[in-house]
Image 1 (cartoon, rainbow over the protein chains, first blue to last red):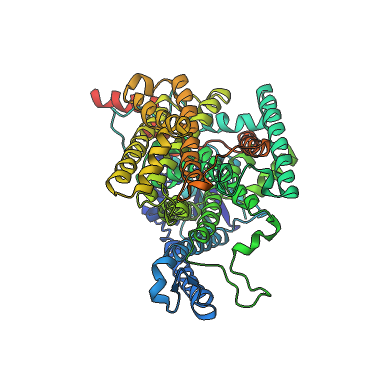
Image 2: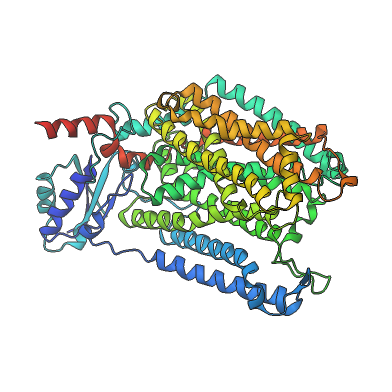
Amino acid sequence: MANKVIYAVYEDPEQLKDGARKLVSNGIKVKDTFSPFPIHGIDPIIGVKRTRLGIAAFMYGITGTCLATLGIWYFNVFDWPMDIGGKPNWHYYQNVPAFIPVTFEFTVLCAAHGMALTYLIRNKTLPGMPARNPDPRSTDDKFIIEVRTGDNHGHSAEEITGLLRTTAVFEINERQY
Amino acid sequence: MHAEAAIREPLILGHKTYHDITNDIVGPIENKAPRGWYILTTIAGLIAAYGTGCILYLISKGIGVWGLNKTVDWAWDITNFVWWVGIGHAGTLISAVLLLFRQRWRMAINRSAEAMTIFAVIMAATFPGIHMGRIWMAYWVFPLPNQFGSLWVNFNSPLLWDVFAISTYFSVSLVFWYIGLIPDFATIRDRLTKPAWKKAYSILSFGWTGNAKAWTRFEEVSLVLAGIATPLVFSVHSVVSMDFATSIVPGWHTTIFPPYFVAGAVFSGFAMVQTLLLVMRKVMHLEAYITKKHVEYMNIVIIVTGSIVGVAYITELFISWYSGVEYESYAFINRATGPYWWAYWAMMTCNVISPQVFWFRKLRRHLGFTFFMSIVVNIGMWFERFVIIVTSLHRDYLPSSWTMFHPTWVDVGVFLGTIGIFFTLYLLFARYFPVLALNEVKSILKTSGESYKNEAAAHHHH
């Protein structure tokens, strides 16, 4: 039997969530959802794990702090201690208050750009990438659940669509893949 | 679903559906631009071209063609720089600070405010660039290895802090803005039918799909970027103020500068947002999304920050007397009664006295009056920077060096030119980009939309 992908189209995020809950409670795995804006509370229903982008941003930030500290120490303390108004930079700690602004800005710079790049790469969204949403209406006003029969060996396509029809679904589309 | 109190005014008027929001925002991009757009863009473009000419003339001749002299060696250039950076503060404040405070009214205005921020920061960065005289040496502001031996930039100097602050602020604001734009570009991509345009928006949308994980990441990125952009906004204008405050020039050498500059920046930034949005809402028929309530909220921010600025002016005045430093005292007496008294009183009237009329609810919600006030505030904030910079420099410790500053046509041309370039960029944005964060607006439709709120209220009563 060929594998089928089923798209259940909803008109409201709350109705989609009810539909997803019904599928999951009947032991059917939901592959993904597509929506024009974030559906709050869908992640725990369909088992999407929490993103670790926040941790990544923290790591990038710390890297920025270290690089800035190292750089400023090298430029203004080690390589050429500047003597401004009789206040030479003989030691990093003596001048550290004056070094805070650049260290802070560089931390933010690294955290923000590191996170943004990681985000774009992890989402596979880069210039020229093809769009993979199943239906152009999913960026306008439709909310779509994707279920694959290949993920749900115990359930037939008819059983899944039958179950979906008991929810507030707007339309159901099936495709071979 | 998150419910909202019935007494809160709706943020989206009338009966809108998700599809209506797409139509209202994407429609103007698909259709031919109205004649007014061509007229405005032509005017702005001509001013921009004249300004660019002035900048090229300045670069080819050197900054001697400006009215600067040995005593007043910073004048319109740095005034314009600080003015534009200040205007640039509202965008990030709206999108970052208001996001952290979960203010839903920001969703209709954040996109255009962020665009304004980016264009304003570009205009701001122009001034220190051309003030260097030899702009082709501009990369010397970065700590780059060079053939002069151990010659590095000075990390003790606020001028260098500014390089890092402004470049970080610009690039982070740009990324924040673009990440928000990606899903909206995808909406346009999926709707357009003309192949060339579809292709263009397809490239701009980076292949956005809108699946569950992508949205989770989107929300995380927005939140974290907002979290780090918030201290960034405050740091940027604090650092700008330290360009002055760490010097020993009377009138500049005050510790109040950082908070006072930040409040002033937000004040002028919101005024510029009002100027732009009040026109845009009318021309692009966005009355349902940018409501009187939005205008009122922004006017409340204007009155709060305007009052902070007023308190700062008076504190400055008091401290100059209380400090017992005669140079400081003189600097302030000279500001109010010296040859630049008109600039000082223009600043006081526009920034301190006039915004207080927003205590009246009727005026706060009056669109024409708000537009007028937004211009007044922007004029006032330009004079504030002019007063701080020029009146402090033109008479300092050495009376034999006292002089006046007279702008030349190049000073005027460059300033007008940046206004022209700014408006050209903004008009192009309004034509080809989604002017509202339409996907964010959709997400509050069912909680803050007028018809949905009324329905929910009706359910309650029965």
